[in-house]
Length: 280
Image 1 (cartoon, rainbow, N blue to C red):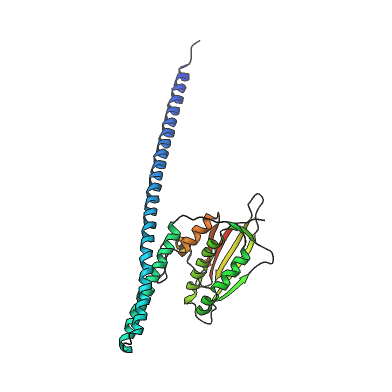
Image 2: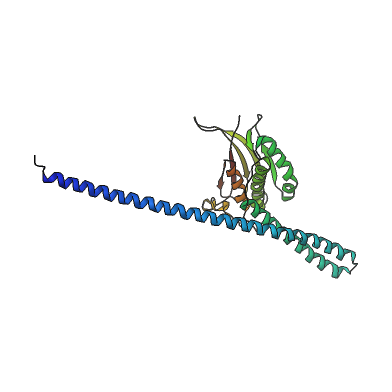
C-alpha cells in the first residue's frame, strides 16, 4: 500500500514543530537556571555585605556611647569651672549640640541594625488591646507635649494573636511617631488626633482569621504616588529622620506573617493598618 506524499509532508512538519518547541523549552529552562544561579550569587553577596555592615555598625555604636558620656562630663566640667557666663554658655551650647547629634547618629545606627539584622521572634499569645493600652500610656507624655490627643478604640472582647509583643510594640510605635511628626504642620483650629483601634477582621470561608491594628492620624495625608515609597529604606521628608522607621515596622510585621497597608486622603489624614494572623 502506497503512503500518500501528504502524509510524509505532514510528518516532517510535525517533527519540525516539535523540534522548534523543544528548542524554545530548552532555551527557557537554561535561561531560568542561569537566572536562579545569578539570584543565588546575588543573595550570597548581599548576605555578606549585610553581615559586614552590621558588624561595622556595631563597632561604630560603641565609641558613640563613649562620646556621649564624655560630652556630659565636659558639660559638667564647664559648669564647675566657674567661667564667666558669657564664656561658659557658648561652650555649653556647643557641647550640648555635640551630645545631641551623637545621640541622633546612635539612633540611626540602631534603626539600621534593626532593619539589617535577623529578626528573631519570641512569640506568645497576646491580647492586642493590652498592648495598645500600654503603648498609649507610654507615648502620652510625648504626645501631650506635641499637642496631639491620643484616643483608643478597643472592643470589649479579647483580640488574640501569637506575636512577639516587644517587636510588635516597636512597629506600632514607629507608626505612631511617624504620624505625630506628620501632624506637626497642622495648626489650630484643626485638631491633632492619633487614634489607635483594634479589631478582628471578617474573613471569607476557607480564609485564615486576621486581626487589625489601626494607627489613624489627622495629618496632611500622603499623595497616592508616595504610598509605597514611604516604606522603602532611607525615604523620608522629615528633618533629622533616619528614613528607616516605616521600613523597620513593615519588616517586623511581615516576619509575623502579616502586612501593613496605608489608606490616606490629602488634607484629611492617614490610616496605617497592621493585619496579623489571629488565634481563637
